[in-house]
Length: 283
Image (cartoon, rainbow, N blue to C red):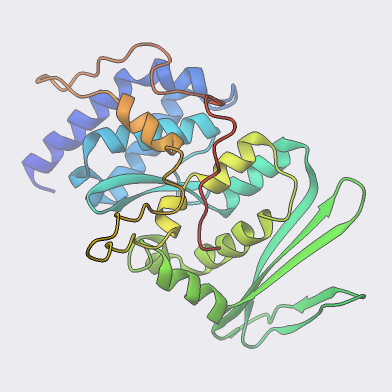
């Protein structure tokens, strides 16, 4: 790593350390701000492209992760770069963590099916899923599924083939980069979770987690035809919470020090526009 890169890393570390009081205010009690900053720095050092992203969006993404009580460790969530901006992306393990804390659902199992597994599912009056994973040489991924058990014992199921998943990926803004490339199976599982969640009762925190990365799943807005007003992308009617955090994210001064009022950018449970439509996505 060059001397310049080391200097930038240390500058970011200093800036994140200065934000520890804000992280501490958002994080659950069992996660210290110091640990959170260490995990963010590990993510940055593992993915150097984050150093090239707009710094305000990097800080905003870290803040959003803290608000959800999740770690950007690649399992619970990840900070990815999209068109020069950092974006917080909750992953399946993080969503499952929020499920356990929500009290809305008893259990939620999400699994990937491979070519040499024994797999059968049935729809209709007697829905069921049977899955026996092969112990070795499982082959290519062919499907993902989600099984939810409600508090009253009722079960709900969702199955997606790899073709279904790839159809969503092809329409996603980030389909050619980030976790779609490095962790396809996890993104496939997340895709079936997102689809299934539309039919499930959700707590506010869990709903926020499912909607927070819509910008990465939605297709690129199409340019308007001549003489027609420019089309707004789906979900543009209500500003995303991450965008609000970005707007309030701190800008480093010349010494690389953050100036941020306590609670700035936190915006927890913002319901300033309760009647506005929720942003939508192609799944």
